Length: 133
Image: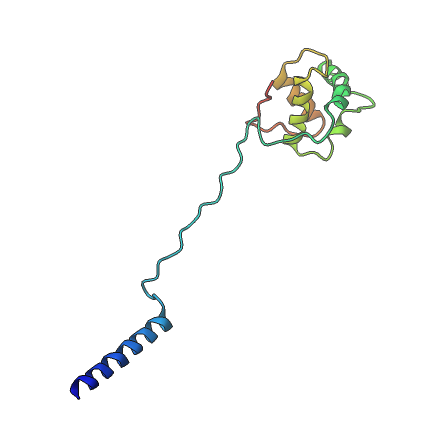
């Protein structure tokens, strides 16, 4: 008879400890979820931008650039309106695309002329940008 009481007591304690474990879960020894680091930013300097306009339209920028080199303010500037609405990096990429395709039809000192034209149009050439020519 004592063994029946002992078995009943063992079953009762097992049920009690299981229910306590279910109620409290794993606290205070719960594992923390792993921390996932954010993805790295896209590389800068010649990458990351895009040109949403047709590079052939940028042929008009050659005339503007020639006038700027001669310190003559261009009249009827048709280049800057093409670059309006673009962020600085995208404007630089567009001009580089035109240079790469030799659409402008002139020999360029790429870093200087690119900055000159961008500045004229109210854009800033990103410091670490290189034109992939």
